[in-house]
Length: 75
Image (cartoon, rainbow, N blue to C red):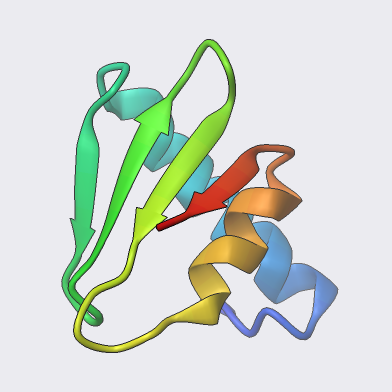
């Protein structure tokens, strides 16, 4: 599947995957992204995601979450 964020289809696929992940998570849950060690804490009612940097910066996370219509808070 195409997850190239620089293409419409890739961004759409990434947004769909991330939305399904967030929908399966409880409010105020945290997700640790294995490839970067980044922690993302979600607030469903406010549609905010707090990104806490890991061992490898990953700007694609912010791009996808913002494309979902959520606000990103970086710490």
